[in-house]
Length: 413
Image (cartoon, rainbow, N blue to C red; front, side, top):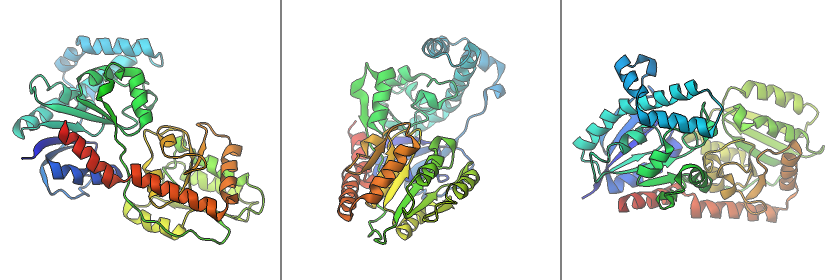
């Protein structure tokens, strides 16, 4: 008889936000569990198959200022909240005491809102395992039910915004000591994330942590062009954190006569400004061609890559939660990468083997030098990098294999 699992997501099966993360994992989990699904209500339409679940429900949070005064008073007088505020103040001074209190009160109010929904599903569906795909107030709510349901197991996965302190407005992740103490397993999308958590909150419970790479689907290999042009592709949101402008500046710093074709995939607030910057930067570089494709739906991404036939993937991002899916997808096609050493990127990009690893804060000259190295590499050297990239993807980042391993892991807890 299958065990019963409650999966709590930030959207899936609604919208596109978790398609690349959860599609393979859901199918593997269905083989071993009866699944109840609780998804955050983002008003997005149902875009994934809804068959095979015990139930699918949506939840939402209302802001603290809409709470009843009696509820706010109870939260305000809660000693656990006061201790958490004091811990935040002690470990970081980026905000005032009042700001910490307001933010942690709001977080706690979200816990009280979702708790009855989780309790109801756990009781009615006789849930054995609660798996929160992100560490959110839902995780804290599920953990608070363990005394009420003694056999209940709670597992949470960490990615980026729910892990790194610098990703929050107050530079503090609330109640992480409680999560480390009460959760049955702590799952991380990269070794870097795991070590980050252990260094701050989980040093007393190292046996609970596990790194489980998400992986990506296979997007098929192709034969690169051999016309003397180096083809680069970048795939990210056009936002300040991704530092796409550094790619433009690095290409503009290449010696005259280097034939380069650069394609950027992704939309964002900086896209128009990046187009303007490219026109100005490449005005004196007729051998550099560039295209901004904007947003491309996941189903069309593979065909676009195969039409471009990139020689190398490039990212100059300033932050990553785990190992970027975009690099994993590139490796599934045998495309090596030039990438900054942030988050879990050093776990997949290895200089001279699967690409070139840049410093966390690379200079334009360092990025340009890596592009030159790829441009000047021989066909044999490029072929070796392509083979190594694909081999690493197959061994560690194949979404189907990783999903099956992770579902087996959950089943054995």
